Image 1 (cartoon, rainbow, N blue to C red):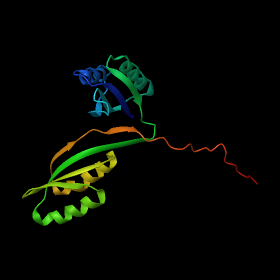
Image 2: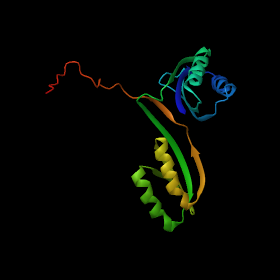
Image 3: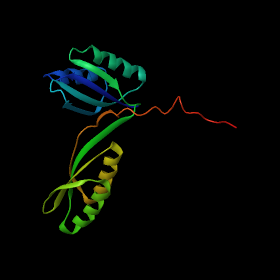
Image 4: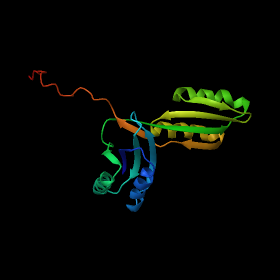
Length: 173
């Protein structure tokens, strides 16, 4: 099962190395990792997507992460309401005659053509993992020269109103 884990950490050198080392010692393969500074320049947010055998193993890793000196907060956000995005840059083979076809594929996905060469085009797409995968699959027939992808970055959605309103009355016949 895939789990998405976020960690707020001190923005100091060596933190990423120590944390990824912890995952390696537990024999977890990090499928995706993103790290970036937050609104506070002394704190970074790390987002990991890992494949885990069981929830007990995930809980153990979270406990180990919480013991790290520079870790401020760790959370498994997989089962929560989150906003998650990934970015991909895809360079494809595209002759001048194919550019119109490619542009027609780009628009429905809200992707952007960011570079055009004589025999190639580079396209940028952002979205959830399945959207990025679907777009890349549509581009494969053109011939993919290069792909560069970020990992998934995510955090919790804004709080929503409770679905249960204690003041709402219902009449039952």
